[in-house]
Structures are given as structure tokens and as C-alpha cells.
Image (cartoon, rainbow, N blue to C red; front, side, top):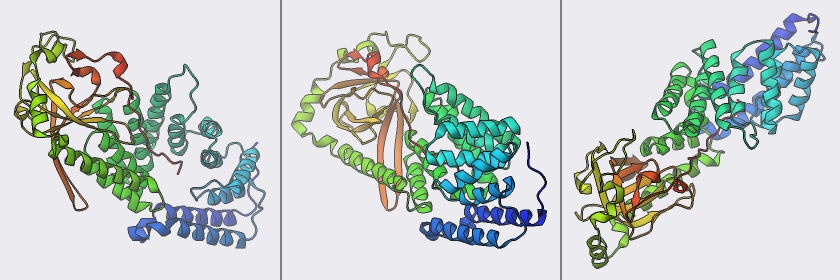
Amino acid sequence: MAEEEEENPQALQSWQELVDQLYRFRDHYFESHSVENAGKKQQDVQEELERTLQQMEAIEGLPRTRARAMMLKGKALNVLPDYSAQAEELLSKAVKLDPELVEAWNHLGEVYWKKGDVSAAHTCFSGALGHCKNKASLQNLSMVLRQLPVSPGDEHARNVMDSVRQAKMAVQMDVRDGRSWYVLGNAYLSLFFNTGQNPKISQQALSAYAQAEKVDPAASCNPDLHLNRATLYKYEENYMEALGGFSRAAALDPAWPEPRQREQQLLDFLDRLASLLENKGKVKGKKLQSMLGSLRPSQLGPCGDGSYQGPLGQKVALELRPLSTLQPGVNPGAVVLGKVLFSLTTEEKVPFTFGLVDASEGPCFAVTVYNMAQSWGVLIGDSVAIPEPHLRHHHIQHQGKSFAFPGIRVETPLLLVVNGKAQGSRSQAAATVAYRAQSE
């Protein structure tokens, strides 16, 4: 049963205004502070919380045991990114006194999320929606669904699809809410990596992130948004945009080490790759000539005998072409054959990257292979044929560094022919992604 009317609605309204002001201070911090102050944000929010609590206590005439009063104080304590046991206690009491107090359910769910109890958070957000459909519960439920523990036999993709549905409903309730668009972007990002990396879905994720920034200036100051979008940019080999996103996330949250680490890892990868490509894997001239001289048409395997199957399952006749003649984008009807001069591994393991040269003795091309099993790879000296190669000329500039090289992207090792042999199904595995989705 809901609580009786508050004895002092003016005092209650004053508490509400103080808490709203506290959250405005946190969410719009960079509208009144420069990015250079990002390292002080959490301390400033902590100090603002302490002032808010003092001001709340100074207001008389409000029974502290009422559900709404406990909800407001619990909400105030929940403003920080860390778990608060006091917030959990107050919000738990508030929902027991007034089970229809949806805002209390939402904040209690966020507290459980911060505590690491994802199942309890899911129960809170679902319960809130049972009382009243609201965008905050839909946003949070969308995020929690992707984090729920999955038992053997369950399909994580089903939760991800449901996550997208919840985020879409939140957007429909208020198309001007930047947080809803951000959550939808994360849902699409997860869907992209769980359902075969459909380019249309990655574009939907990028569009949702862009819309979040368009409708809400505060979204541009969300470090999670920049890191998550940069993760997608990196996978799509939009390296300059990825580096910019990691750098922006690091600037907005200096205490969060991951963005700076990811930025440095990508810079190190590009640095090593560019050096190996330029030096052709440091393979000496005579050895290189010997390797290239051993290339034979028989090493094309199914790509040379007319049995290669195109993306629609049709038989495709392929023409052997030099790497230097490839055009940007997909090269239909073409196949290239070359020798592996080096391979490059990273901490993330994906993609598997190697350098390829052919008999035309042109530049060394970077080949990036995705969705491969961890045990899969190629060795220096292997002959590799790539049907209908997808070429991109990379030109990257970031913080005084520049990289330029030709790259061929291969979505699965199943498309490759190594030493005349097609690759079996064991060579393939699904890609994984690491991104952050906080409850705030």
C-alpha cells in the first residue's frame, strides 16, 4: 500500500530540487568546467553531494521515515559511480514502504548493478516496469540484459535482441533523451558482435551514438560513449577515428586507465605493422627472391580450378592479378597469391595480421583476418591466396604520428587458401568485443 500524504510538501519539494541540482551538476559538469578539470570531477561531485546532504538535513518538517524522503536521500547517495551500502538500505526501505515508487526501484537497481548483483538489478528494473512504463527502467533493463549470467544451452543472442527492443522503446518514449540513444548504440554494438557482424547493424550503432550527441550536449562528454564507439571504429579499421575516440575518453576520465591503454596498444600495433611492411619483414633479398620464385598456380587451390564459391554459393571464375593492380574496395573476379613475410600478434588476438608480397615485387600488403580460431595462423614462407580481396589504403595521423599502408581485410579464414588448401571450419571462431556500459 502506498504511503499517506507527506505532512510537509514544501520541504519534500525542497529536497527534490536539491537532489535534481546535484544530478545536473554531475551530468552537465563539462558545461561549467573545462576538460582539463576532468581529473577533479569525481572529487567535485563528492563535495557537491556532501553540501547537498547538509542542506537536506537543514530543512525541517519532513519525516525522515517516509518513503519519498528515503528515496531522495538514497538517490543523492547514488550519485557517485561507486556502490553505497547506505543508499541500498534507504532505497530498499523506500520500496518496501511504497512498492509503486518507481524512481526508488530504478535507483535501487543501479545500486545493485554497482554492487555487482546483476540479477537483483534485473529484478528491480523489471519490477519498476511492472508498475509503470518509463524510459529509465527501459534504459537500465537494456543494459542489464546483456550482462545477465548465461547458463550452458542458453543463447546470449536472445538477451541481446531483447536488449535492443528495450532500448528502442526507451527512445520511442523520448526521442530527445541522449542517454536512451547511447544505450541503444551499446545494444546495437553488442548485437553486431553476437549476430555475424552485419555492416547495417554497425551503422545503426554509429547512428545511435551520433544521435545521442546531437540531442544531448552532455552525451559528448560521456567517456563510455567515446570508448565504445572507438571499439567499433577499430574493428572496422577506421583507425584514426578509433584513436581519436580512445584519446577523448581518456581526457574525459583521466582516472580510467583503459582508454589510454587501448589508444597506446593501437598506436604500438600500427607502429610495428608499418615498420614490418616497410622492411618487408626484414627478409633478406636472396631469401625473398627464393620465396617468390617458389610461387606456383597450383597453390591457388580451389581459387585456380574454377571451384571457388562466391558469397551467394555460386561458382566464380577468378583471374590471378598482381597485388599492385588491385583497386580500393572489393575486387570481384580477382584472386591474389603471395608469400607471408611476417605475422603480428597483439594482446587482443584479433585480428590475425600478416604481411603479403607477390611475384610483382611491389610493396608489402597488410592482411588482417577476423573471426579466426585462436589456434589458426599462417607461417613465414606460406603461400596464401585471397579471392576477391577487399583493399583499403590506410592514411592515419594522430598526435604527431602518421602511418600509410595498403591493407586487405578478410572476414574469415574460410575465405583463404593456404599452401593450396582451403581452410576448414575449425579455423573459424566468433569475434568478441570489450566495451563499458555503466548504470549511470
